[in-house]
Every structure is written in structure tokens, then in C-alpha cells.
Image 1 (spheres, rainbow, N blue to C red):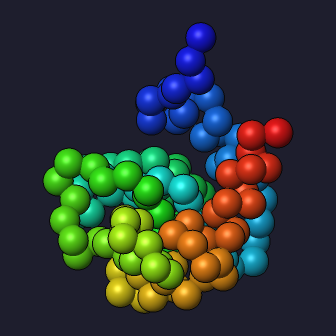
Image 2 (tube, one colour):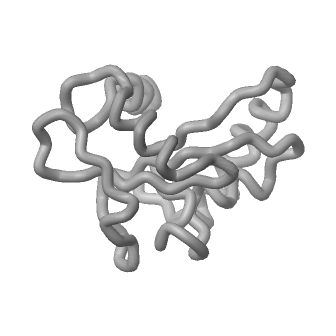
Amino acid sequence: MYGFFSIAQFYKREMPCLIALINQISDPFDIIIDGYVYLDGLAQSGMGKYLYDNLKSKKPIIGIAKNKFNGINEEYEVYRGKSKHPLYVTTEDYDLNDAKLLIKNLEGEFRIPSIIQKVDKLSRI
């Protein structure tokens, strides 16, 4: 059996727990997710937009996607290190250029920032 989930399934299963946790934090913070905020960069909602829409206290969200979604253009590409393959950065309530600079400068010499690699590894335990 494969462990693939559509955004709708994620939204129904894991999203309520994530929202409950985030809503308990009163200090200001930004959220970086492993995925798109907007699939096309502007209007077609991705996981990050669903998260944003369901937060009691809105937090800026930066989405980092590894794979290109049909409709996303080079404006959303970020090249890190010596990689010839970009990451795709989309945002809600956060300046796109600032987000791209932030992602470009996150720790790690490879395409995927170290913090994203660590979180991904922990989530698989």
C-alpha cells in the first residue's frame, strides 16, 4: 500500500493537529512549510494556503516545493549552492523576494536547506 495523500486527505487528517498546535503559540513567528502555498504562485491554493486560511491568528507562511507544478514560472525559482535544479518558493502574507532571499541563505550547502532535511527525517520516524 502506498502512503500518498492528496491535499484534501492531508487537510482532513493532519491539518487539524497542526492548526491546534500553532494556535497555542502566542509569540509572533513565521511558518515555513515543505510544499506550495499557491500551486501557480498566485491563486490556486496549495497546502500552505489551506493552513493559512484555517489559522485563528494569521501567521506569514513561506512554502518551499522541490518539484515544479504546472503553471508555476521562473519568478518563484530559487537556486541554492551549486544545484542546477531550483526550489519553488511561494508565500502568503510575506514578501516573495524576501522569502526567496531567506530560503537561499538558509544553512546547508545543498539544494535542500539543512532544516528542511532534518524536519523531513524526523517526520518519517
